[in-house]
Image (cartoon, rainbow, N blue to C red):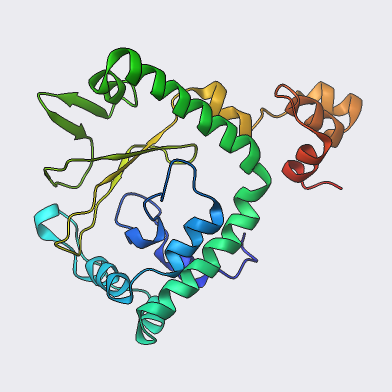
Length: 242
């Protein structure tokens, strides 16, 4: 990844908690949007929204305990060329990041996420929304008509709809809200998939040292990966092999 040219994403990335402009993670346009559809949403973000969210990053939002921070030089240069340019550059970089980091694992990851969606559908149908929300993560709870999400930020909002998105990469629950416009947009609740068996389908355990000595690290890694069924094409893509 160090060799990848991702100047905008690198400067907007976080080492810890904080605010990332929401236009980089658009609300899904349906239950199973394609990568191309999501990238097009990023690319077509209204310029005023792009600049507004970057200004929110710079100025902060004291009412939500969001502190401001100085924008990196590369972000300022991109902003000077307009919000539409920022959106196009962000979409191009997200595509490169996707191709390098996620595309080889996407088939297995999507299967894991679909399994989590099916689990949620079963809980919702059998026990209702309250049980579903309380089953997502210890940091998410539903009580007395209010959905509480643990966060270092403070915001309270009355909304008719919440978009719930499972994730295999986020370490803790997060909520994407529109911090820059008065127009109400439903918040997006992202939560980590709790079933480690599901999450591990895209990151199989390393082979035992004895097996690696006997078969060689490449063959041992492939054998260990087959705790989950996979085709030769899937194994080649995940392990970057011919």
